[in-house]
Amino acid sequence: MSISFLPLLPSMSRNCHHYNPYPRRSARVPIGLPPPPALSPEMQVVVQQAAIDLKFFTEAGIIVTWNHSLSQWDLVDRPQRTTNNDRELYVGAGSFPSVPGFNYPLCPHLDTFGRPYDRMKLFLAKRYEGKIEDFFRAHDHQCSFVVIIPKVRPSKYSVGHAQEQGSDEEEDEVQQALLASTTSSPSSSQTASANPRISLPSPASSSRPKPTPRIPGSPTIHRSYFSDAVATARACSDVSVMEVCWDGVFTGRFQTTPSAHPLYPQPGAVTHSVMQPYDPAYNPGCLDRTYQHLHFFDSKIGRCIRALNSTLGVTSDVVQGLIDDSIRCHSCSCQYSFDGYNAHIRDGLCGNRPNPTPVIPAPPRAPYYELDNRELPAGKCLGRYAEFLDTPIGASMLEWNSRLGIPTDVWALVATAVEECETCHFVRTFPAHAAHLHSETGKCNDLVDDDGE
Image (cartoon, rainbow, N blue to C red; front, side, top):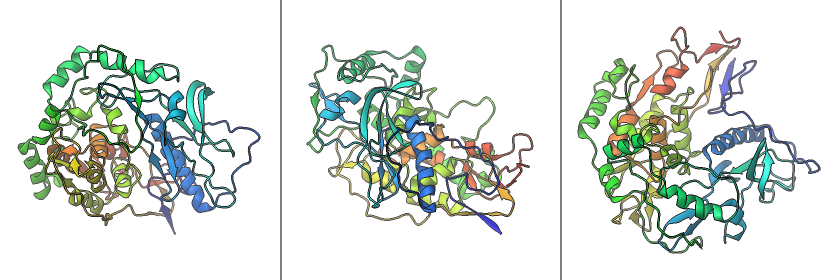
């Protein structure tokens, strides 16, 4: 008898208590609303996974809506306003009703006729779980899915952090103007100036911005996500780093001696210079940039990346598939997943270079690799489950699977920064591999007994 394990859902094993990294929100369901129909076993699995994923998006400060066709969360682009000096500012929650074409989120539930419920209702400055929050919540049935609206963050061209209470329209005007004028600390400033791939915040305009609504679908001026200096630095990869990485794979050196890899964790080691743009210690706010571009978080490739950067792990075929499917843009010279490559093309132009260059989209295709159900021996279950997407390796892989892409030397480093367990034969990134080992014995903690031994 065997136990079938569903990928990325580590709480289904018989008589086994798992650590759940994303606990369900203790949402107080509104009284007096009808409950949704009873869920089928298949839908119970979908809804449980939806709750896990929503917790991640909430902590990352991302607005999402449920895609009933694909049974996954889709990212919602927060509305923006364009100022007179062409700066783009995020709109505060209080201004959402006045934004043309902005649709509120859907929840995963279906009504008695198998149709999605109405879109959620916007609640402003309401108490939720001990805090005053702006959020979306269902208004026509009992629903524990609550989409928290994060306070307006810095625009995607700045690096700083700040939060202010309130939901009125001035939030997106005044707060972001202050953020843009805030100077970085000496340490972060020195670090950024030392690494050409890390940009500094832009100075604020001397006059108060006067936002105008940005109508979805309206023509926009081509604007690269990266400045000319950063884009140029990203296009110039360190050939010596790439040679070390791929030679280590082709010769089998990394397989026999993982510690030979440049990113292998060593006592007292500092972050590799190539990976500093993805480390908050060197580039404050870099994870905000990553979390704003998780449009393919739940795609097949996205789930493979999550499993690879977790104690779950993947087969070696999945790792090889990710490497084989990477696409290099001839304009910005960066590497992308299939979805990320096509997403970075806007109107037939590379979107990551200030000087627009025509590029050809990749033809539609589906990855030939995907996560397989794991068959565990009777009486065995997986150990503690945890993801490491906020590490430099995990964050850069997420950006590879987005319109941002990553430099070619970064891709060479992270694509090879993996280790296969000699016991369970699953491959994980270095942080995930170390976490899946027993803290005392150093042995594989994957196929543990039901009683935890």
